[in-house]
Length: 248
Image (cartoon, rainbow, N blue to C red):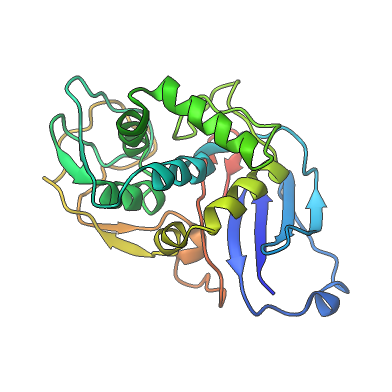
């Protein structure tokens, strides 16, 4: 049995060959998250839920949907040129340079492994021409998989009062993404060597994230850190907000 586990706020896993549900049912889960949902990945059956329809802030789990749209619309070897006038955004970044060229593949790894916000913007502009146009695609895709209580206004998940989802909706989005083998491969990657020109000075203030160094990128999901091993699990994305704590 494969279980898709989403604890908001918030971890996304795909487990295989776990303890049978009948045996696990005897143990009442102790979930500290404000909202959570446990879903059987193949059937979509909800096995556990806590406030599954409460409106929540998705943070960088937004990038699950961003990546899914990119994978559906782009070739992995497609070249992406950082446009003139490109400006960075707050938070985690690889500090893309104007005129720099990377493949969609490399950018997806930077998006999901390093959780780079500037990469989310670059991919959004590459796919749709602008961030607003891309978020239109995000909301269309979310609705198409049944996530009708969500609204997205950016591709990275930085705070906005009009940017929200629910545990149930995010489970639907994650299930759709996990069906894509390339998404599963990238999301399960612990480290990735990202080519590039090195790290210029950050274009904006980054209060919490140290300067990203091109080269080896470590997965931001804590489930891939030493001592956090869970046999058979696959990560998807995580995020955090200063006033709300981790989202993954």
